Structure formats: C-alpha cells, structure tokens
Length: 306
Image (cartoon, rainbow, N blue to C red; front, side):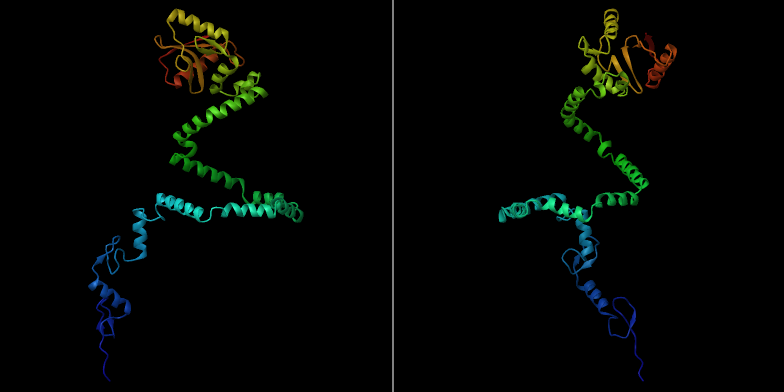
C-alpha cells in the first residue's frame, strides 16, 4: 500500500490530498491574487471587477458620497418629477377618469358602506375606543411625550427652534390676531371681558393689548392704563425732561413684573399703584423691590406712588 502524500494548499497553506488547492474557493482566490489588477475603491482589496469587490462595498461607497437615487434626495425629487411628467404625458386623463367613473357608477358608495357597517356593528366605534384606551395607558403616552420633548429641545426643532417661531409669528400674527380679536370683541371674551379679574389672568403680556385696544388712553403717542397714570407721565416730562417710550422708559417689562416709569439719568424707577387688595403698601413696595433686584437693577432706586 502506497501512502497518500499531503501537499500544502497554495492559497491557505493547509494540508490537502489534492495537487494544488484544498477547495474551489481557494483556487478562485489564488487566481484573483495573481491575475487581478483592479483595486476596490472602498476597501482597497484586489478584484477582477472594475471598481468594487462586492455589493457591500458599492453600497457603503454610494452611501458615503451620496451617489444614486437611493442615497441622494435631490436626485430622488428630480427623477420623481421626470417620472410624474412622463406618466401625465402618456396617460393624461387616467387618474382623474378613475375617480369620475367610480362616482358615476356608485354616487353614494362611502355613505352606503358606513351604513352597512353600522347595521352589522352598531357599537364598533365606542368599543374600539374603549379597547384602545385600555391597551395604551396614560403612562405610556406621558413617557412618549416627555421623550419627544427632550429630543426636540436637544435638536432645537419645532417649538424650540427660534427661526420657525419667528416665521410662524410673522405669517399667522396679522391673520389670526385680527380675526381672534374681532371674535373676542363681539363675544366679550378674554381681554375684552369687563371683569378685571379675568383681564388680570392674561399676565404682563396682555396689559399692552388692554391699553391699546380697550382702554385706548393715548398721550404723546403712548398708551396708558388710566388718566392719572398719564398725568404722572406729563409731570415727569415737565420736571425731568422725561421721554416716555413703551418697553424702555414706560411700562418696562421684566421677569415676574412690569414697572411703570424709568428715569435713566437719575437711576430711578417709579411705580404708580392705587389699589392694594391683599398686600399693604410696605409689602407691595418690597415685592416690587425684589423684582428689580432679581432683574439686575440693585443700584436703582424705587418710588411707589399711591
């Protein structure tokens, strides 16, 4: 009996009974190493193909450099427009005619189907709503909402993006603002309600709209809450060369409050306040003083006129 001599594979160097290679795979790899001249653009390996050694390498390369419609959004939109125009040219009345034919044959199709469903399942909507409400708990909704808010806040999207807020305000402000104001004026709602408690619920931001739209007390191109407040402003103009400007020297808005007058030369804030419903005069003064200190006006003086 002759012994079988084992030979090392030319590719993987494993011992084999064959003459040169242990398998067909090793044979192919060996011939690629010797005869291939092309190099893969992604991984740098030798290949018999023109550019890439495998489909995975082509996909990774295309994804990185946004090649082809699959990875490039601009090409997707262009190809979509071209395809849409081409279908319109080939079938100009195809899609519109389908809807018309269905409506001509069955004019009351939608209402009839809903009626049939209601006859067979009269409580379908209420039962499905109850089951859905039980399946999805309040906790899951709240968690999802919190996570969504976090992601929006981190990425500065939607409500947290200042640019979108400005654009929306510019577009919707003049349209929605006028319509809602007229509607509230007719029904006497919100700021147009004569009840002062409801007016005060609007906060500091609502005071400006109250002055301009409801009270309408104008003196030297500025609006005031009362005639007495306008009188105080007039005396300050005569005595201290005071120039009233809304938001800067008159009705200065700040965190947690609003102060009536500011004379910058004297570093002096003046608050005109007649009513003290729950607080005493001293308590009210301390409260206004805290607001100024918190907003960086510690070096400024304060006078409260009652």
